Length: 354
Ligand code: MRU
Image (tube, rainbow, N blue to C red; front, top):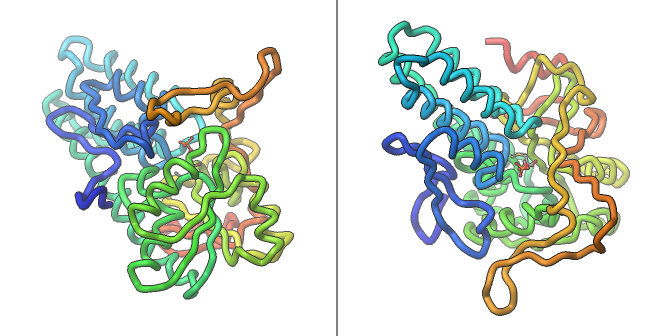
């Protein structure tokens, strides 16, 4: 994707360092953060300097590569094992995190020498990132066909290029539609508490010159009922074998409202986000995040400084689940890099046959 005319990926690896767009600074500042080793990379995932299903996966892959590169010959296996444990503990819901760690581990396991393990870990991590970008592009080509000229799309959170290595999932069909000359308009849910919609999706759509408006999450039903939205496309952090989808908190409400109002509700996701070992949505672990995301708002103050303000009284209890599960019955279809399937066990299984 282009930022001020220059192509960027969300995350990449260069000379053993993992570089990434520093997402908490957006939309007010565009800076690249640099992680020297797997410990720093792990912390970047945990603190959400990098976030979003695919971007977390690619970063974890690179973090694994750093662990293999830096592991001492004496105690090599223990060093890698500890790195795996800490990386796996960062974001419990994001399936791509586990997918990438397991892929790098499996690739390295096939080699016997330390030198070969280091080499293959780096190349496998790079392959994961490249596949993410290619598959997201393909989701755009496939999903674009669902978008009619002059249609109004609703999206929740950020499943754009910042949430992946490039292109994104839910936003990729929108970028493809724009490039093919269709007129489109996007309603962007603000996505409290971290406001990934207001901060990142709005910023991405501005970079791409796509007409859009940010709305408070609780305005979605109002616009659906008024006939202003033709289709909803959201991303996914994990998809269970039966088609239930975990995605950013608030997705479930949007799906129920879409059904009530007769609006098609699509999930766009890489097949690597599907967890066949997970039978149904109630088995997906839901990350609970810190209270500060709810008690405070972060942003740029009128005098141009960056800061946070408290918006609720001291002493009230706070609950902050980062994701919810949308049951398969609310989902019209899942747009993957291999085609669009119904959210059911049979069609999901078919995606993995040859
Ligand atoms: O907590 P985040 O920002 O890492 O949440 C993940 C997401 O970006 C969304 O749930 C998104 O819609 C899933 S696709 C990247």
